[in-house]
Image 1 (cartoon, rainbow, N blue to C red):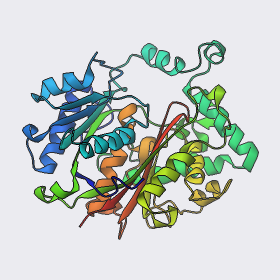
Image 2: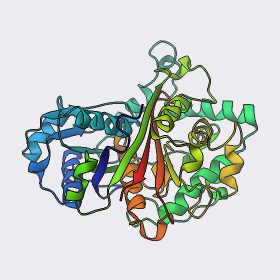
Image 3: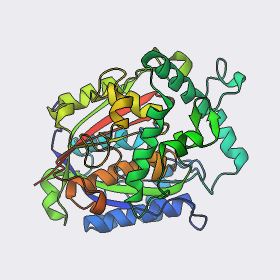
Length: 388
């Protein structure tokens, strides 16, 4: 379990602008993010011999990674386009580390982008939202993605007595952090009352309980830790990683109030030789506010039913016991679909370098990142640590 602990390091990161970007295609955003990450790593594109991407919903390519390699003008020995929903970012980081460890390549560029805000019509977006359900047991009943997460919210609230205020506190904390991020899509202050007064989407979820719809992209450069000295920044090491997969469709979930995030977290902790109390901050997948409460519990930061009060009491704010989603997360920074967690990854690297400015978590040395794809279906946890 400890074969790759500390043996790989992120040495470059890059973000594009986010929000509504009609003048840039998903391909343009992906290449922009890639070039920014290479510049941050202090290398040219010819140093890259591994490339990982995920396909774009707004501008799909039959062979996406190969198309991006063509645009970049590189011929990598390791080239793959992956898809695991929202967990794609961390899953491919783990797999790219294994590829380097296996000698398939030395330097991997991971770049993802999409244009869900301006690249899809309203009709296309609704088809996307309604086509994720099981074709026999879910789709015929007309539910969309928010409806599936509303089921989760209701189940969690019923079992543990969580309140709408607890859900709203997740969104408010994310917005407090986004206000400190100059590149965040949403930077206007937010209150619990604002969240609860926003228009209903799928009971009990309101508009501000739901993640944004965005254009944008981000990229990172991963290489072996013993090569990190060749790059200008403090390296950020991959200490642990783990996956957990429980179902494809929500109607087949074993429990709506817990998830296979627990399994992913346990595997990542075991590889890193660390536990929840060792984490200085966390970046958790916040597609909808109730998801964060379940993740906090499944990953060992709170007991069952304790996450709502934990967030509402301010523990997840910067300066609190467990700063969370320090860039604003999917709720307030941006959510361009599958690439959304890339911004949690680039944010974590900047935090561990000590380069996060006003939102810097003081003394940050170790971070946990978690994302999930589908409807709480496919989970991946990674643990990162500041190098020397």
